[in-house]
Image (cartoon, rainbow, N blue to C red; front, side, top):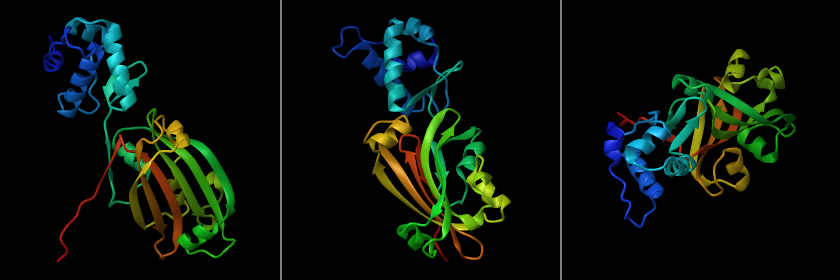
Length: 247
């Protein structure tokens, strides 16, 4: 018997709670108490079923429920793993791609929209730009490996990039190549509930909890260059910041 099956304990056939829910509850507790840590692999369904003396259907149903909750993730050809939460340093100005690579994950994007336009009245006020100022807009779903992590809606002053096509995968890398990577930023974080459309794009559920981060990025000379709204999955992301007492 493995350490995991010992931790899960014996399922009670006489309990009014269905076996798959008992197993689901035991697995959830094992994850919450770090018996199963982030990115740990679950034993194959066949092995779990044998060790716990239940059917594979029971095991699969229990795991399906935790996959839907976002606690577990299936990786094709590899198995089922505990989903690791991502810690984003809220006090450090880094890009999504840089964050994911630092954690050993592969970032990628699915483009929703790439367009040229002029600032809206709200953008003109936020970016401190004159009416009619040209901008580039980049809307996309950000992935880490195969998991959708966030929706990103970025507006960039067109003067900061050579062209719309200059952005291949990382916006900040494109801005850096152009010599216009933001040197500082103001960020605001607030809780939101996903709309049906947002939930569909993030493989989540309508009204699931999310985190909206609004970022206004400034160049070294003090000019505003970027306004980005990013909607992060609340079941995956933790935002942290190091604080100190000022002298």
